[in-house]
Length: 474
Image 1 (cartoon, one colour):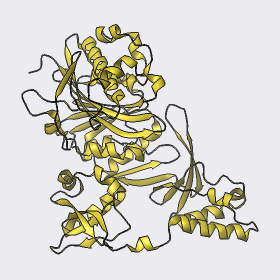
Image 2 (image 1 turned 120 degrees about the vertical axis):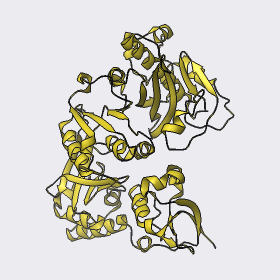
Image 3 (image 1 turned 30 degrees about the vertical axis):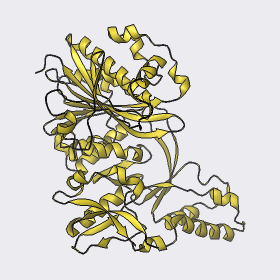
Image 4 (image 1 turned 135 degrees about the vertical axis):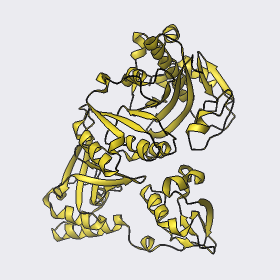
């Protein structure tokens, strides 16, 4: 029976660069070998579930400038050597069962279920999840048990994660089980990161947003990253989006130490200034073309700072991260429409996660429920190319323009109308903040809503791209 797998085809001289990129980002299908094509090009098998992350027209610029790539189907692909070898989990169970038996204890299903099903790899370190190795026997077998785990998983150091500390820094509770040094190296989207796993977090779940930033065109722009961390978004803005300069704000001293190293590792220190401490005390004003607010569950405390940072003469773009609750019980919170339309007030300091029913119903009525859902908004220019086309190198289609209370947005249908309700409310509140700050009219345009990831049971992490311009701008 003939089988087919999806693949990307590129020139032979760029094949290894593509392979490294696809493998690093979990897109390469390692069950099959790369195949040389009759014309000399190379086909790299990719996972069907990851195809939505790939944009062939832009992938060449991201991975290997000067290369080209197309999608194809590989017929009767050849299995890789790796796929015929025992899985890491199989090796782990076999070697640990032998260790347990040598200690005089019989292997059982409880011990089998106690083994990790997933783990994180950072260079030569494996970080186990907190639910693994809970049985008492593992304590009696230390440190040999961790040496066995390292050998089975192809690592030199082993650590175990715990709950994130509620200390304002989101410090991870990570225990080093094997090894003396907690600093690790990680390559993500061709960017090199180093950090102390016991002091800093690395959010692999944000990879889609980091890839999206890579498609931005920030040429000659000044960007402010209000919650820089170790450089999750600062570095993509500098290395892939081409920002002229980035101001990176961070109050965790351990993250600052890692950020300094990461800027040096990637040779972009000369285009970035780090501002240590609380960003609400930031002395900067009137300089940013773009502000990134990458804090969840809400970056609301940073909105007034972002408004002060934005250029007064022509405004700019905010990228606002937020966790939106889709649970029905959160759609009936009290809501004061007068306060929202009239200007900033005390009530506007409340979290936007609790969306009122009036906003949700208005969002629901804006589209036909029979239409297939699609999850984004794009601003459409009136007499010129849209910002999406001129400042964003990714794909996107245009649709009809909608207006509400001084904000503009291009309508598309939504998987969850709560996203649109939230975006419109944020656009109005940011507009009010800017008008109060500058004592003149401003307009806000919803460019896009990006879904980053979801948390069970009903929480979506989204990013709102919000354009903010003074009304007297030509």
